[in-house]
Structures are given as C-alpha cells and as structure tokens.
Image (cartoon, rainbow, N blue to C red; front, side, top):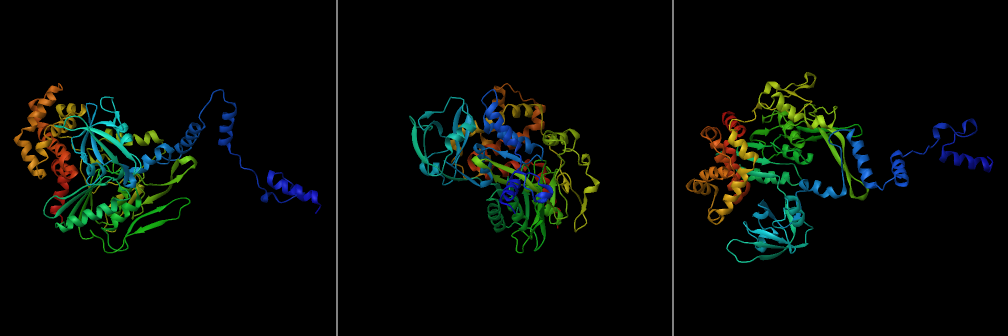
Length: 524
C-alpha cells in the first residue's frame, strides 16, 4: 500500500471520513463524540453578554438532567457534601453539647457524656456569650450559625465564654474538638416485665451495633417481646437494615434483593443464630417511614415473622449510589430497585414529576387515608402472597397488618394555638432552666414526675400561655389537658435524663404503642 494512502486511512479513522470501497469498512470507523453541554458552556464563557459562574451553570445543567430521571437522583455540591453525609456517618467533629436558643441566647441543655465540653467543665444551663472572643448573644443568631461556629475538625480548638448562674463575670473555656457520636437508636427500655421498646430514627453506619447492644441489654432484663418504632425513620444504609432484619430471621431466609438495568440481581439472605429470633415482634410505621425502614419492615412482613402496625409507609423502593465528581461534589444516582422477599417493589409512582411526588403525602391526608384504612387503593396487579398465605401489595409503600389512624382526639383550639406559637417547648425549657438546681438533684424520672406534681407545673403552664394571650377554656382542657400534661413532663424530663427520660413518659399516651402492647399481650 502506498505510504500516502496509509496516512489517509489513519487520518480517516480519527476524523471520521467515509472511505467507502477504497478505504476501510464503515463499521470500524471511530467518530468523535460531540459534547453539547461543554460546547454550550464554552460558548457562554466566550461570548455571553454578562459574566456568569461556570460552576453555577454546571450545577443547573446537572440538576436539569437528574430532574428528568426520578425524585431521588440528586446532585450534591462540594460545600454541602459533608453536611449531607454526616447524619449517616454516625459522628462529626464538635465540642459535644446540646443547646437551645432562647431570647437570642445560646443555652447548653446537656453535655455529651465524656465529650470535650463535659471533660473541661462546661455544664448544662451555661449561657454561651462568646465564641473565639466574638459576642454571639443578642445578635439574632440562628441554630445553623451556632452549629457552624462550634463544629470543626477533630483536634482543632475553639474558645467559648459562658455566663453561669451564681457566678460573677464570664468563664472562659478553650475546648479541643473531638469526634461526637450521632446516635440512631433514640431510646431502648422495658415497657413491662417482658416487653421491650426500641426507637430507631435512621439507618446509619452505627445503627446495627447500637441496636444489637440495646437488644442484648433488654434481653438481660427479661425481654421476650419487642416493639420497634420506625415512625419518622426516612431510611439510610441498606446494609444496616438487612443486618438488623437478620437478627429476627431463621437461617437462609431472603431479606431483600436488588436489581437494575446494568446491575444484576443481588440477594440478601439471613444467617443462623439471630439475637432476636425468638422474640415476638411488632414494627410501628407511618407515612414518613421510608427506604431502608421499608426494607426491614418488608422482610419481616413477607417472612410472616412479625406484625406491622400503624399507617402505610412512604413508598421508596429505589437504590442510590453516590459517586464523586471533580471539585469535591457528588451525584447520588438511582442504579437499582429493591424488592421484598415476595417479589414486590414498593416504590410509589413518580411519572408526574417531583412536585406531584412530594405532594403525595398531603394527598393521602386529603383523601382520608390517615384516618381510614379503606381509603387506600392498591393496584390489584401488584398483589402478592407470603408463605403464610397473607396477601400483600406492592407499588406504593407497605400497608400495615394492623391499621392505626392518626390520633387527633386530643387537639383542641387551645392545643392548636400553643403548638402554633411554640409555647409548649418554650415553657418546658424555661421551667427546666428556672428549676435546674432543684431538678438536677433528682435520681430518676419517677422522682422528677413527683416533684413536678408538687410544684403544680401545669398551673404554671396555663399562666404562661395566658401571658402569651392564649386563654385555656374548660372545654379545651377537657380535650387536651391530660395529653398536654404528659407532653410537658416528657419535655422537661428530656432536659435532665435525655431521651431515656422523654420516651417512657411520652409513649404512655401514644395510641399506636398502646395498641401494640395490647396486641403483644394477646399474641401467643
């Protein structure tokens, strides 16, 4: 072959010239791929009338592409990535305090046990006046601003100045930030002689270990029946959900499987020797129970292993994978669907766009679904049967075995107003703060409740509401009085005994939990 023709052939391969009979076959041609997005971005950079941020344009373009896919494929800018990942990581760098904002003042509610602040001497009730010598009291600071000032890299230092009741002047502390745990098990305790309760708020990296520790502790106290509260749990890591489900199932039971267009089916099976395999089980769900929570609930329901009680779950059956992008950003892209053991995908429809998808829970309320189980309309083509013969449905969340309506029996005009104006939480914190030295000496929640009754705390609350121009009528208190008293006690207890003080009190008035207790007591 002449040298000239060989060169032409090589050039043709790279620039896409069709040589036909005198060249190579068309199926071997390599055509350059046109990058329209970068071409438009470059054109704007070169020629647009005003200066624009290329980074902002890129974000808009990526958001636009993902918007056409599904509601859970999202772009995460670099500056938001750490904050987005943090809740599922199980920890963050900080000083280890829980705080409340009252009258534009940061008040320490609690210090994390053995955390940086507790070790150095910061106490509940301290008012943080300065951070790094800058005054932060009385400057209309918000919670996000406080967090940004106090959080930081492990090992870094921050100086705070606090005002302590009974101490003249300010007390300065230089705190070395440490790793602060984020707990996903809010509470675990025995509700009666044989029934335990565990509240899980998300499925994070540490959730399985937290759950296993809680279950073992409850078993040591005699637990044979268990209520797991997944209401409001929006999900998280699939691995955490499957490992907890494994603790309830016999060997080689299918927990969940995933499959996608480019991802082959992956099965998750149980193993033998689960910590809770002999416990009677009720799982509590509501319309905010989603994703990994639905995997766990679906595995239990489809294996006829326990009862689901409450309301229909959210309906998220899509699996996301997070991939890094240049510049520190990331994309969470839906790469598969998950299926419960019977083969149902519980993802609710999203073909009408993200706005309609996000409004679906509001539509449930308007249609009466939160009050009446028969308001729920399932697609008959999404009908499945469990090994025990129970009928279950896919295509829109997990329907509980026992429906419990949204409880509104305690809502009066007075209750609505004090909630709307934040009076309940404001009073609970101010009352706790005013009586801190007295309540701090109490040994347990029972002693606190007795002390609150002695102090006639509810009379003080009624007067507090009246000062805020909210009058309590006799009819209102007949409807809401008992519930308000329990709620206030629980909120005050949280300030001194954390969630272990809050939930045992608050749950005593919970309609769904009381139904779960009755069911477990009757269940053989």
